[in-house]
Amino acid sequence: MSLIAHRGFAGVYPENTRAAFGRAVGADGTTITPQADVVELDVMPTATGEVVVFHDTDLGRLTNAPATLADQKVWETPYETLRKLDVLGTGESVPLLAEILDMIPESVGINVEFKNPGVDDVRYGSLDADELVERRAVWEPFVERTLSELAVSSHEVLVSSFHEGALAAVRELDGSVPIATVFWDDIEAGFRTARRHDCEVLHVPWNMVYGTELFNADYHAGPFDPIDLVELAHEEGRRVNAWTVESWYQADQLRRAGVDGIIADYPNLLQYGASGGVTPDSTAAEPPLQSPDAPPQ
Image (tube, rainbow, N blue to C red; front, side, top):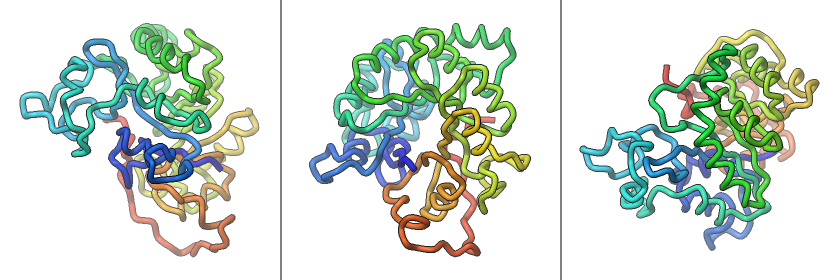
């Protein structure tokens, strides 16, 4: 099972920063080998057209932006301004996608999640035919810009999104790029999107995985119908990665269910459990978590 560093292991390192990715992939001079098989990062545009690695819509939580800028959208902000802000007290500026690609070893995969194309009105989940055409057009300029930067990289790349319009734009512009649809609150709708665009991968919340003690646990949505999405996905030739995993116990449950990868906030989660010689306590209770990736309702 693959270990995917969520924003560079955001549970222990400052998310979506050079420092975090450096630690996650062994490129910071202090770790010898990569802790992750793949790093996951979020992208959106600036007002001046650059592709930056950043999760939030506005600047307030993640940077030291003054009050006058804290509520400003990333895509309304010139890169020259972003470059002067400090991300999470690291002394680092908001990184460009190209900078992160340059620092990550070619042996480590990249999962690029499309967060926003630079508009206030975004649509989550599965779309009807007319809306899909409209949303694809909205996403295409930013997707094309991002794919052009990924094209010069030698990394194995996976593109993912909650937004069907983004996935449709990737397929339209370069059908060779593997894509993953991020499931939200509806298993059937997620498969509808996956089949429409022939997604190679499904990204599902960990409490959506049937056959585990995690199924329908208190996380971000549910309850879900008892559909074995891992079995169904594998029958259709699709891989399944679960997000966002916080403990070795969750990782072990997902491994036993046949999940192909975990998108995790912490390293070392695969060193225990079924393949690590430790038998999990089936009565252990996992505390309820809030989803860090949940789209706004």
